[in-house]
Image 1 (cartoon, rainbow, N blue to C red):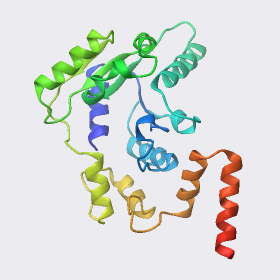
Image 2: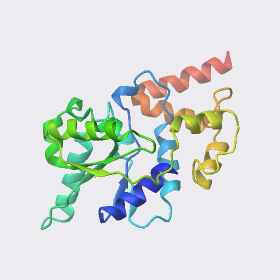
Image 3: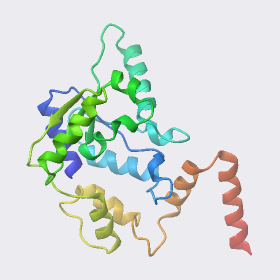
Length: 227
């Protein structure tokens, strides 16, 4: 709910025509972490964006093989826009939390990235003003174009809080949209004490493995069950 509200407010504040939501693919910084299958994250993002004017969900990063880099996404988007609207050059804005802004100079192909978009640094609820300003200043010093969004009426909800509540079968009202909550319950997401649906297990495997290894893994599972 916090992300949806922030996206709506930022879209209005900067007079953006569209807000493209990007479920993350295979982020390099989460190599050893348990990541919810991309298919599920795309489904939940679409449910969260349902009925929001000018909102679109783009699953390019989930479908991309290998690790996900923002530069690849922005280059792909720029190419699509230039083919669709050859006489216009769209301005691209990339919305991030300020915890990410301070480390932009470490991102892959940072200098090229700075030419592709302007960043919007969304100040998180409760974040210290000095820390926010320091991170924005650091990004600008490295060459990034950064706009600031400092409104204090956003919802303070962490993804960790949501997953922990779901793992204990607690109600998620106010944390996620109602349709997303129903999806989480139906598919037993974040319930690490029991298996998720077989469809999501297969979706997870198909994202992580090559086609040959995926087919092999299904064969091994079938033979294991037989034995």
